[in-house]
Length: 118
Image 1: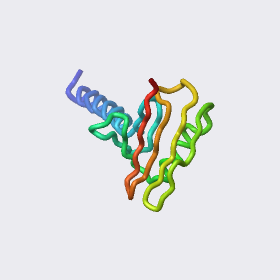
Image 2: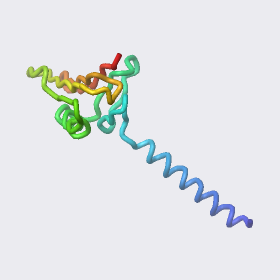
Image 3: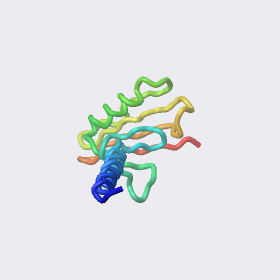
Image 4: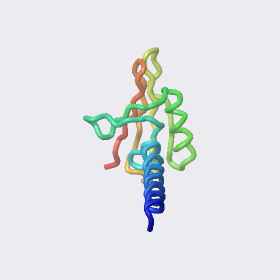
């Protein structure tokens, strides 16, 4: 193989590897089988607590879209105060490794907390 062919093969490999990496890097995060809103990040000290990358309304809408039509899932409001809002996602089936998800907004930060199935 001549030098030009080797360069072309190397460039192609680099392109394919970087394309695969970026597709994985930009995928929405997930936890215990549930896709989370884009740009959500796990808190360093609690593995089942996440900070949402979206607003409270967008986060609740995301969970309604992802989980709302599944059998055994119930989504309802548990707190509605001026600076605090919270919604609970109840899992009545054994389909996932969690029994509930609390989505709460305190001031401007939105938290997602998974309650693991025991």
